[in-house]
Length: 152
Length: 69
View 1 (cartoon, rainbow over the protein chains, first blue to last red):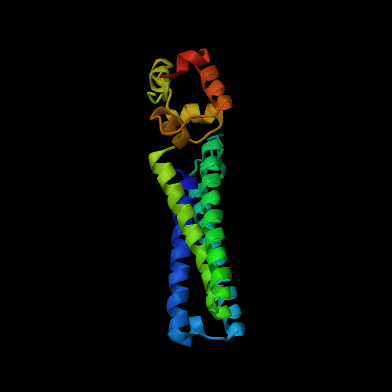
View 2: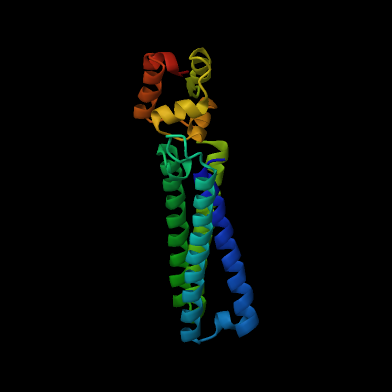
């Protein structure tokens, strides 16, 4: 398994873990009714914390992988460390993942606007937008894993 | 219409090139070993530039390394 592929697994794991943690913590602290409440300030704070946590966990795990790969790399060899090498196949797979995540996010955003039009509270719509981002990221990771495993 | 795919002789050429490993070839053309493996297994079709670089490593014309069947 290449390092680019390992990064996809790390990204998937961090998104799933942070999202589940957010769902559980928010439900425990604010109660299940929070997602349909009208407390936009609390929702804004929670979503901001979710985004920061997601970026922090992803960076932490990604950097740990890079350090681990660099430690495994033989310093006497004059070849480039594979952790830093991104080739044309990695770029193509990254691009197709990005395309899918944009598509999922766009559909989620349209659904959110329809929900807002339908009278959903803004907090629920915010969460729907964030959910579409998360689902887009998960779909992107899954398509990348499939492309790395099965080829294209 | 019959579906045509890109075939290659990289594995054979590596064998005849004093047992060159996938890693050696990958380093020569500047890609990862996983990409060479994917090309050999037919899971990935390389760009024209990479295909020419691989052919150049074996000192063969492109047709001897890749074929479209």
